[in-house]
Amino acid sequence: MRGHRAAVKDIAFSPDGQTIASASEDKTVKLWKLNNNLYTILTGHEDWVGGITWKSDGNLVASTSGDTTVKLWDKNGKLLQNFERHKGAVFDVDFSSNNLLASASADTTVKLWDTNGKLLQNFEENIIIWGISWSPDGDKIALALANKTVQLWQTNGNLLLTLRGHTAEVKEVTWSPNGKIIASASNDNTIKLWQVDGKLLKTLTGHTATVKEVVFSPDGSLIASAGSDGNIKLWQPDGSLLRTLSGHDASVWGVDFSPDGKIIASASFDKTVKLWSIDGTLLKTLPVHSAGVRGVAFSPDLEELPYGGRNILASTSDDRTIILWNFDRVLNLDELAYACNWVKDYLQNNQDLGESDRRLCE
Image 1 (spheres, helix red, strand yellow):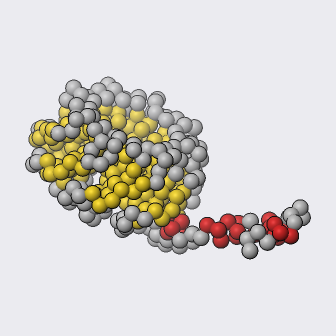
Image 2 (cartoon, one colour):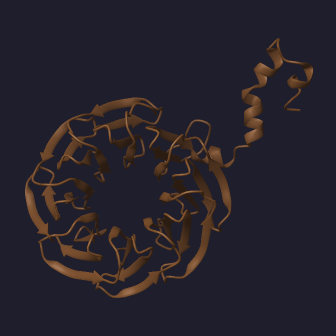
Image 3 (cartoon, rainbow, N blue to C red):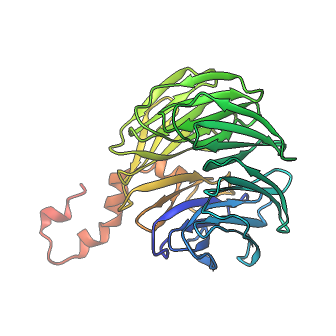
């Protein structure tokens, strides 16, 4: 999927899995259909677009930008709202389960909006806020802060807790599917697991560089972390390290679980995507991007795809492209047979080839 003129920083599937939104440093959001067709280009941002997220019903998509705004679009690309109350670059945005929108900015605030553009709450901390995440019930917001802390807020503007323990900036925060555990990832090379009452459950140590991303499996039984040390680590919620997935030659920036929780995809600045079984087996290496890969995302379960399978894996890169992979087909692909089938006519019909070349695949 080509068309962006600068690095692609984020991608997100619509809840029905039929549309992909991509955010780029070229100041645009693009909406794509699964057949690689560029559906529409969303223009209006005046600086890089760094984040993209869909509302749970798939009717709205929100984008964040270095131009200090959040923009709200309908699923056809029409601009509905322009949220302009931030005074610095907006790093993250998230929809709640009850249709509110929270945005985190370099201006040291989180702002809470309704989808009509009304500002409901303003949380100001005088410290850069790198990430936000709503609890599954939509009642609380977790913030990842540059002052080494995680904060929990209620939607009415009350600060509930400040979670202290990291020794460097907290870059990301996420909730377990059941809303009982909060995971925070930090530049101190650790992940911390917290109860919602603020109790530190475990500190996950083992990475030797910044933790770029942390995700729970769909059923919450596993946690995967991506590190600048080139490793992916797989943990249990009790904090025990199950295994380290080693094989990338550069920082790992993104990680995601397949919908059934049995496969992990990782994105690295070594220009590859790797697929792993949760038992640690490296299943496939996909070396197609020509620059660092920033992120990966699995589609939700879909109806049967062409050529079989029910899932798509998307990868996004500094080479300005998004690549869609037929996940099930890639896993079961015999690379040699596929390549030989691809060049079969050439080997049979090119008059310049010798007989030994024609029999190459035999």
